Length: 216
Image (tube, rainbow, N blue to C red; front, side, top):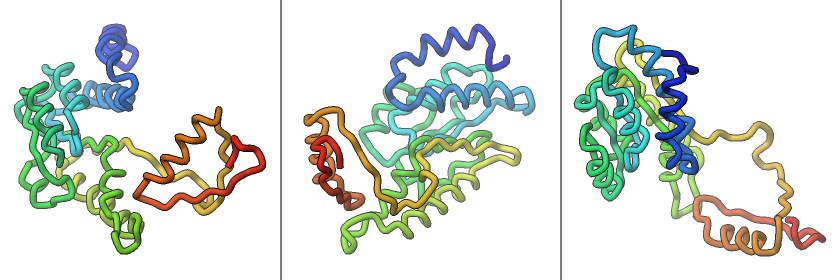
């Protein structure tokens, strides 16, 4: 089955409509392609591991769609949030969902090996956990080290020839210290921005007033 197979186009068009605004559609589509690509190349149902699975919409949706290609019983999701894990178990009871820290090497080592390991919008959470009360913001060096360790531990969960799938934010090209000019649609949006700057904790955000009240 190829990416343009009419059945999958129709299936995902209907199945993914509720997830259009959750930032998960592209990840699901890409991993669906990957599952159908590599499944004929192995002699066993594929095992999936999602680290930072939340309520399980990604791994659960993939396992439901590809039940003949994947082992639901031997696939696992891991998340640190107890409420998300409880919802995942309720909505997708077919696979194991574990409450735990995805940076815990011992935990990951205990899960076994998988054909596909997913990290979807999880690494920025790992980075943000390096908040320093002394600095009053994220310790960037420590955060990057935690991300590096998390990726290494995730890769250690792969079967030989397995796939590590990453979806997350990236630093833009250029100097991160360069000032940005922001123009707001209206004064209400400007007020929302000021509220965000006041409440945002991971980093200190500073800005200067422009002559135009809609610009900073």
